[in-house]
Image (tube, rainbow, N blue to C red):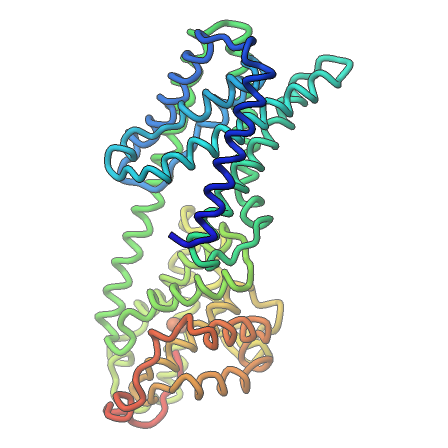
Amino acid sequence: MKKSLKIYLIAAFFLFVFLLISLVNNYGKLISIEEIIFFIISLFIVSNMSILMNSSSDFIISMNIPVLLPTFALLSPLGAAVTAALGTIEWTKQRNHFVWYKFLFNRIMFFVAAGIGGIVFEIINNSLTVNYQLISLFIAALAYFFVNNALVYIVVKLSKNGRESNSFLVYLAELVKNLITSYFLGVLLYYSYIEFGKLFFILVIILLYILKDFFYSRIQQLNSYTQIIESFLKVIDSKDHYTEGHCMRVAEYTSELSNALKLSSLKREKIISVAKIHDIGKIGVSDKILKSSEKLTIKEYEEIKKHTTYGYELLKDIDLVNDQLDIILYHHERFDGTGYPKGIKAKNIPIGARILSVCDAFDVMTRGRKYKAAMSKAEIIKEFKECAGTQFDPDAVEAMLKLIERGTFDHCFLEKEIVEGLDVQAVKSNY
Ligand SMILES: [Fe+2]
Ligand SMILES: [Fe+2]
C-alpha cells in the first residue's frame, strides 16, 4: 500500500473517531434502538438485493441513498451514521474478497458521510422558521453525497497512482443525475414512512425493485444488441484480415483520448461503443476489393469510401443505437474539409468523429497496411504534428501527442527491427 494512501486512511479513521465522540456526546440520548434496527435491516436488504439480482452485471442502481435519506429526518445524526455504516455492508462481497482495511474504510466513509448529512439536516431544519423538511432533506442529501464521493474519489486517486485523470467536478457531475433520482425516491420513502408506517415503507421499496427490474431488462437488451454488433465485427475481420482487431484497438485508443479531452464519461462510453463498430459498413463492400492485394483502382477506392455511409444507413433506424451514430458517417472527414463522405470541416465534424479519426489513423500508423509499413513512435509523432489542422483536429492531436509522449500507447508500437522484416510493399490509402 502506498504511503500517501496509508496516511489518508489513518486520517479518515481519526475523523471517524472525532465525529463518533461528538455525535455520542450530542445525540447519544436521542437514539431510538428499535428505529435504527429497522433502518439498518432495510438498508442491508437493499444493499444486498441489487447484488443478488444482478450478480453477473456491473449495472447496479443503488437504492442506498433513497433508504438512507429518511433517516436524516427520522433518526438523530448518530442514528443515521450508525445505520449507514452497518446497513451498507455487502454480504456477498465480504464473503468472497474480505479485505479488512477496505471494509473498515467503507464503514468509516458511510458513517462520516451520513453523520454529516444528519447534522446538516438538523442545522437547516432548526434554522428555517417554517417547516420545509424537503429543503432540509435536499441539502442534507447533497452534503452526504458530496462527502461520500469526495472520500471515495481521494482513495481511488491515491490507489491508482494518480491515473484517475477526471477532475473531481467531472466525477461529481456524472453522479448528480443519480442523486436527483435518489432524492425523489428518498422523499417518496420518507412520506410513505411518516404517513403510512413501516409496512408501507417496505411495500414501496418492493415496488421500486419491480420497476428497477423492468429498466434492467432494457439495459440487458442493449447489451445483447452490442454483442450482436460485435459478432458482425468478427465477420468483417474475417473478410479483411489485414485489419483484424482494428475496431477494438481503435476503441481502446478512443477511450484514452476522450478521457484526455475530458469528455463526460457518458459521452465517452457512447463514443467507445460506436468506435467498436465504426467500420461495420465494410460488410457492404465486396470481398474482392477488401482482399485485393493489388493497388486499388480509383473506382475500387470510391467503393471502399462508401463504408461510412453503408455503416450509418445500416444502423440508423435501430432505436437502441446511441445518439453518437453520426461518428460512423463522419469518421473519414478531415479537419480542413477535404475528407469524405460530405466534406464537412472543423468543428462541424462531431467531436466523436474527430477523436475517432485520430485513433483510426494511429492504428494504421502503428500496424501498417498491405501497402504501408508500420511507423515508429518518432515517425508517428512527426506525422501527427504535420497533419494537425489539415487532416486532424489540432486539439485532439495535441492531447494524443501528450498520451503518446507519456507512454500510454507504448505497447502498440512494433519493434523497428520487426517492422523492417515485414513483407511491406508500397502505400495504400488508409480506409
Ligand atoms: Fe473507416
Ligand atoms: Fe477504421
